[in-house]
Length: 170
Image (cartoon, rainbow, N blue to C red):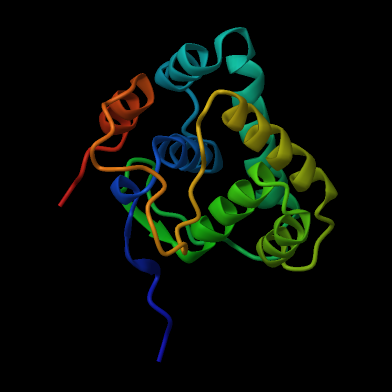
């Protein structure tokens, strides 16, 4: 029996806005969908002058994983609410980097890269995680038991962007 492709009972809407923005950007970069002006515009709005550099590191991360990794990752389309297990591993690595859990970062990247050298991916991932964290954009672990944000929290710019970018498509 094959494993289900998506993380059960978890959608991006259940996670933090930082998670939605990070995975949307990664999926777009990994799938070569970077010509849209909305990526640089949103990253500029979120990260100011550092926006292009943060987005460049997301692109580098996607390229390193795609070209150096020893297996093909399972990704869904950029604005999907669903999260594949490979995407969840990446999000778990980003979350661990934000929390300073280096062993978890290494373990997740080792799985993602399937034994290939993880240092270049780790460098880009750590940079992205740090920049998101510095802007208050926490990246959730999709396998965690609880939400990182309360339902009662007011909509921030990040929430509005995440809702715009990731419209539910059922």
